Length: 114
Length: 116
Image (cartoon, rainbow over all chains, first blue to last red):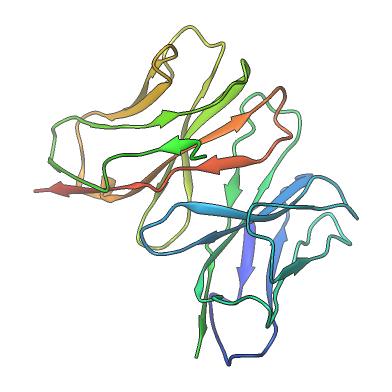
């Protein structure tokens, strides 16, 4: 079945360490997104990519980095520069050219900094 | 400035009754799309319904309907005949501009609890 796979589902990290969250999709979607969700809050956009080898910062990109070397993959690195990285991270994708353009989401990765 | 406002942090509804979840939005664009997503406790976001700014009819998808009042910039979600499985977080979202290549902004969400 087609879908978006995020890994790991749960991740613990010590302060000062970088960590990379994986996002893979087999939907043949062009655009991919990373959102952060904190308790009691909505989703905030970190980075997005419309095509391979191109990506743009969202509203809260500081302390994060991404790459888009393949259409299927959009990994997110949470660097030590991110002051409060403990959160739930959601990856999404969208097929260009559809009428509605809804996002398809993965099941998320929960990062806890110890 | 907040683009999407959901004023109800939590809502309760009796099983089999209807419930309305509020959403107001702010945009100066004439072309935009409005979305509702459901997030169960598992964390996955599930797309429910879409309304385009030029759509004259309110969108409906099964038990979900969107009460679109363009002049008031309101896009409320109506769930009819609530079921226990409807208990979840619900998010309203908007994409501004033509086409669908722009990013999407989300509200803070409403937690719906369906009581048996």
